Length: 385
Image (cartoon, rainbow, N blue to C red; front, top):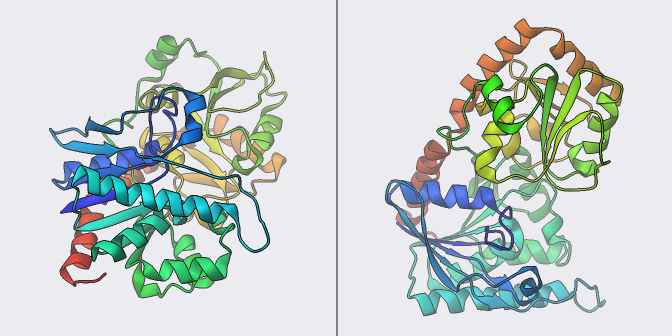
């Protein structure tokens, strides 16, 4: 198939961490033999972050599979509710215009278009699909439908009727699509996120500690994500306070106290380096309050780390009782208790690690790409637009 992926979230030199999950998905689809192109419009305002990326570039997805990346420029507007309209709707229009212009200029005629997140990508993809007469799939990974707020649920439901089908990354999201946007259940397929198991795999803990300069004799707790309340960062910091032999390995961005005695590492790292940092850890803790399909938890499981995470339904498609201790993400005592229970029970950690490695096999990104490809092919074969 010839596939065009439309997204506002795709890595570039100025924003290397933006949309790494999207790049991994596109690359996996390309390795399945599909002709993949990415249309990722760049805001003119992004010039303040560094040089613009090239308008057209080629990426190597592995196994000799190329991916064409087009980055047309588009104008955005402040997010303002003017009463009679919202300025984000103007940005939707310029994003779509940039996407359709890039497809024409690059001579890309896809068999199917895929847009990630309801807005901007999904909205643009649904319009492009209607214009070109090809199926349009909207990929929905928002744990909360925050991208529809400028449009409002009524307008969003009307605009999303242009889409052929929806790819939800969790059962909860599929239910929310039915409830909020009135999407028929038969138009929704659920495919939880996947990871590259050749990259995310167990490492030798001692070797990784020495390589990264992390302590070997302490109980190292990994965390990946923004240092914000929704990820449970404040509760995690409080939960380990006073635990002399526990050290945090915090992979992400945000405000964190300098010289915190419980922190062995704090800062952003390249996606390719995350497995090494996970390899230096004994446990992964993410008391997140809302998720779509949490890549970092899947990545940690694939590295063999036992998990402490939330008891919310949004985690049900990923973890189970054998792989994770589930806690109320707002309960500091529960988080602390879970960390201590696993710290003091190495046999339980070994059992959970084995269960995590087995569970991670069901999230192989290449197998996910194969199944998604078969589903997309069925949409094309049925002539659905």
